Length: 222
Image (cartoon, rainbow, N blue to C red; front, top):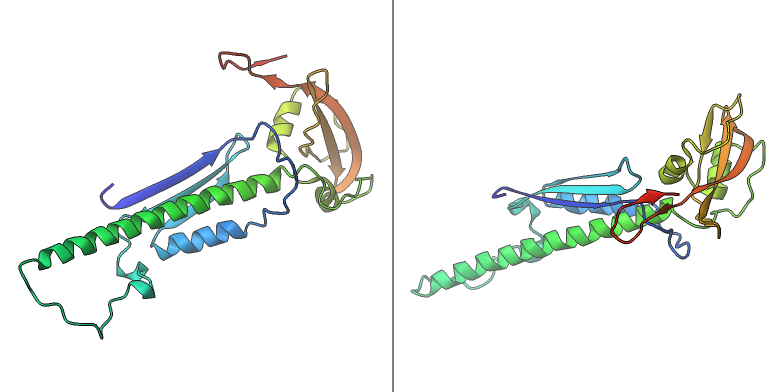
């Protein structure tokens, strides 16, 4: 609009995890995004979407105002004094164009940083290899299992709904890390870790039909 600029970046669950663990995804990228948006007088929000993806949105003033100017953009008080001449109007136009280009480049930079932040957060969720390499075993705490296998994955949890074996009667919660194990039979392997009072009491492996997309774009299930 004339007064505000809205930048939104949104993605869904990727069809497959990254080829290799990158060690990225500390969340520091989002901190940098918030700082840069705040310097422009705006606000930034980042959150996970119900479908398992991520969304980042920034609301920025179209004219950040003098408070957002950098030291390099400040006028030089020691420079020569401008003299009003018939052609001096062109200099004012040039200054306006320069300010508009600078603002546009700033918005493009924020958009690129937002997309980079989404990639980092997404890679942190879908890391294909356990961070610690330790195999989970009964009696471990939930934190230890997450350290070994990664966090609970919304897409895996949704795929297991209605197709998983019965949970242990004493289980208070279960997590479904993303494994990415696709079998030749066209099914996806899911590993479920169930806890009682934050202690691992059962590990179950089972398979579910994979979602396929035939020519034409209409998704069906096996």
